[in-house]
Figure (cartoon, rainbow, N blue to C red):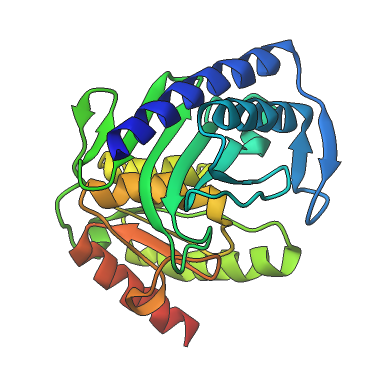
Length: 265
């Protein structure tokens, strides 16, 4: 069952990525702003989500849907598709070739605190990279099975993070990064949470943390990271939520969380 769901997620994510890439080539227009003046949504975001939603409704009409750009819809099967049509919209807007289509399917209520992720796919249309995972079946980049990087001392760890859209939140996050930077190898802020999580899975980052993510930002990427051997969690081992998410090889995750907890105290 999970493999069938993954095949559907992968097929639609690749098709949606091709649509988003075409719209990027044609030119991008901002359609609206959301939480702040720097939190934008483009017409391509909305078109891509509508495309994904229609394809899923056709293939699995009884499932629920939770997307970034449209209203949530309950289903009758106990399954919900959690979709970010263009993760990394600011990168997309500026022509930075690092954005993604993220599609996951979860069992239970569409809430990271209680759901069970069954399958997920993250596609970067610009590089052609397709990350995928089904629960219990491992994580893959194309046909290559993924494994997190081996444990390293935190001083040798390359850490990814991201920043929120409110000025106050960004100020807090910037101050924390300033304290963290001397304690790790370096920091990367790449602008696409789903790909950051997949980079942990691929060993391109030793760890990743962020506050303020929405369910669609991490649903697929978190499963990819976990299936590659990462510990993916919130504070103190609780499920990842908008409050906090951390993903890393378990030893690195423990050390990074301990340091971040120290900074927050």
